[in-house]
Amino acid sequence: MNDLFSKTPDREILSVTQLNRQARQLLETHLPLLWVEGELSNVSIPSSGHWYFTLKDDQAQVRCCMFRNRNMTVRFKPQQGQHVLIRARVSLYEGRGDYQIIAEHMEEAGSGALQRAFDELKHRLSTEGLFNEAHKKALPKIPRHIAVITSPTGAAIRDVLSVLERRFAGIPVTVIPVAVQGKESAPQIAKAIALANRADLFDVILLTRGGGSMEDLWSFNEEIVARAIFNSQLPIVSAVGHEVDFTIADFVADLRAPTPSAAAELLVPDGDEWLDKFIGFEVLLEDALLRKLAQLQKHLHHLRQRLRHPRERLEQQAQRLDNLELRLKNHIKNLLSRHQHQLSQLRLRMQAHHPQVRLAQMRERLNAAQAQLHKAQFTYIDRQKLRLATAARMLNTLSPLNTLERGFALASDAQSGRIITHQQQVQPGQRIHTRVAGGGFHSVIESLDP
Image 1 (tube, rainbow, N blue to C red):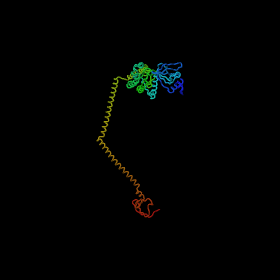
Image 2 (cartoon, rainbow, N blue to C red):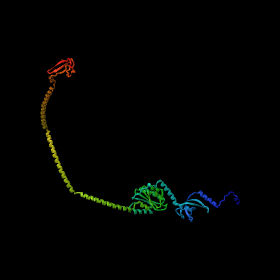
Image 3 (spheres, one colour):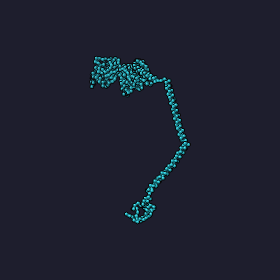
Image 4 (tube, one colour):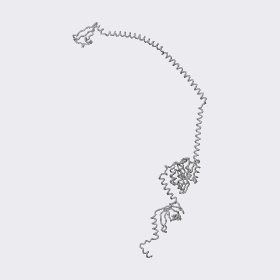
C-alpha cells in the first residue's frame, strides 16, 4: 500500500509555511477591504502600541490586529465588550496558521452608522439649499408668546423657564409636549412645529432638549424634522444637547443656540437692562413733561394777562354799538338830506321843463328868431345892393363900351362873331363887323397893310 502511494507521479508537497503563505495570499487577494461589526473581547495593548483583540458576535469570533500607525487615528481607547465597526482586510498569521483580520479603521458601531447617515443627509439637504442664510428669519426683539417644543419632564424645559423668568418675566410661554427620543419622537416634533404655526398665537418657536449620545439626539437629525423646520413660517431657535453637539435641526433652524439656557437668553432681552432703559426714558419723559408744563404755564400766564372781564368786553361792545348807532343815524340823516336836495333839484328841473314854460320859451325863441330873420333879410339885401352897385361900377369901368367911348373899335368875324385880335385872323374879301361907340357897321377887307 505504501509502495503504491510512493510511486504516484507529480505530487506537489508543501511545507506548512508554504501552505500558510498561500492561504494568506489567497485570502488577501480574493477578499478586498470590508466592514465588520462586532463586540470587542480579549483586548491586548502591548508596549509596541499595536492592538490585539477578538471581534465576536453571539455565534462566532475572529482574531483581529490593528497596527500602531492605524490605531493612532482612533478617537477612543478600545474597551472590553465595546461594540465597534471595523474596516479591515482579511489575512492569516503564518506563524500560527491563525485566520485573522487586519483593521484599517475603527469606530463605535452605533455612532459610526449614525454618523454616516448624518453626513449623507446633511450633504443632501445642504445641496437643496435648506441651510442657506437667505432662508433664515429674524427673531422678534421681544416675543409676544413663545412656543417651546420639548419633553415636559426633561431638564431642558426647567432651565429654559428659569432663564426666561429671570431675564424677562411676563412673556407667555406654552410648552408643546413631545417625545425627544425614540421611534415616535421625530413625527411628534414635526407635527408640533406645524401645530405651532397653525395656532396663530406664537411669534417664535424654541426646539430643545438636553444632552445625550448621538443615538439619544437622533430624532433631531431626521429628515421629517428638518423639513418641518424649513417649512415653518415662524422663526425657530434650535437648542439640542450640549455646546459640542450639532444636529441637522441646528443647521436648518433660523438660529442655533449651544444650550437650552443659552437659547432662552437669546430669545428674550435682559429685563434689568430694559428696566434701566425704561427708567432712563421715564426721567427723560419727566423732564420733557416738566418743560412742557412750564411752557404751558407761561403761555397761560400770558393768556391771563390778555384775558379781560366779560363786563369790560360788554361795555366795549355797548360803546361800539352806540358809535355805530350814531354813525347810522348821521348816515341816514345825510342820506335823507342828499336825497331831499336831489329831489328839489329834480323838482326845479321838472318845473323848468314844464310844457307851458317850454312853450313860452319856444315862443320867445321863435319871436327872437323871426326878428333876427327880418333883420338878417334887410341886412342881406342891403349888402347885396352894395355888392351889386360895386360890381356895376367895376363892370362899367371894365366894359368895352367905355373903351369904345375913348375912340377904340371892336372887330369880329361877321359870319362866326369871333373877336379879331390879330391881323393873321383876317384875309382880303372877308366880311367883318366893327363895333364903335354909338353902334357898329359891316365892311369887307380889301387889302392887308404890312
